[in-house]
Amino acid sequence: MNMTRNLKSVALAIAGVILIPSCAAIGNANNKQQTNPQFAVKSVQTGQASWYSVRTNSGTRTASGERLNNNAPTAAHKTLPMGTMVRVVNESNGKAEVVTITDRGPYVKGRIIDVTLGIAERLGFAQHGIAKVRVEVLGKIKTEG
Image 1 (spheres, one colour):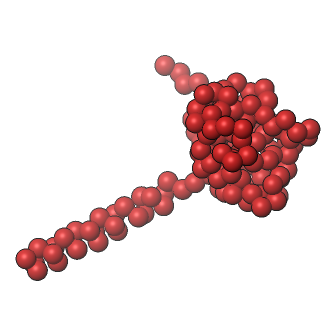
Image 2 (image 1 turned 180 degrees about the vertical axis):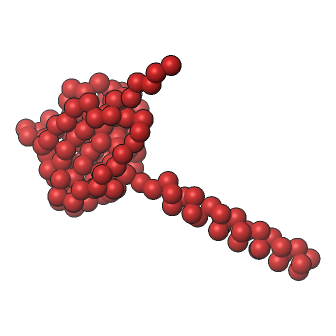
Image 3 (image 1 turned 30 degrees about the horizontal axis):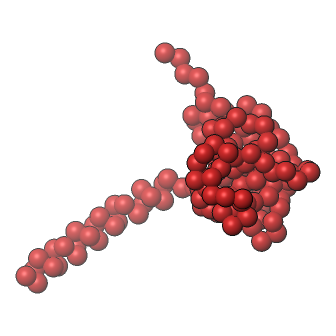
């Protein structure tokens, strides 16, 4: 029985050694220059971003009907179509996150996008409340075939 326990421990250790590097290779969107071969930048907007959450939103549903989740990679924009993917880049630190438009807003003059609280934390402006950002509207690259 003790031999079986040792074999299980060794197998788990080997699995961990194999999985950890593959997880690290996936990475996240916090690189200064994130490239994604499937998407191209169609247009760019600059302005201020703010964040919103379940607590600050009047309800738990977004304009698209989806349930609002504070950690979801989603955002609100006044005019972009629902489902549009955008890359939000914090101009002060270069951190970037790709989000999907699922809601309408912000309704404060000078602000161009509201991101969820989790995205604001990853972009580094949750404590400040607002940040100067670049919003890159992403579109799928057409492939021949």
